Length: 119
Image (tube, rainbow, N blue to C red; front, side, top):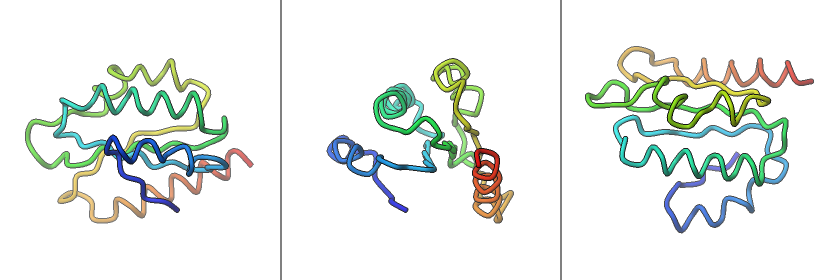
């Protein structure tokens, strides 16, 4: 498991960690609508150029308990997920820290189920 930051300088290193990737957790800051297009473009780039076709991708939309955020539908429409990732196993999970303290457990259960589906 790797935790790789999304800053410009770190993105250059992503390709060194992506080979043979089984699962990607892609965190999206829901309060940063300014960077939404950039984050989507970066995701499309690594999905199209680097990820194996059977890589499971879970988008974690964070900070939904704060005001002024984007939501799952914004991600789907802005990134056109249904078209560019139509053949991939993926999901978007929204994180509201105050509502569900077991969120990560549920996220990893989803990943486990998705892995079983492809085997």
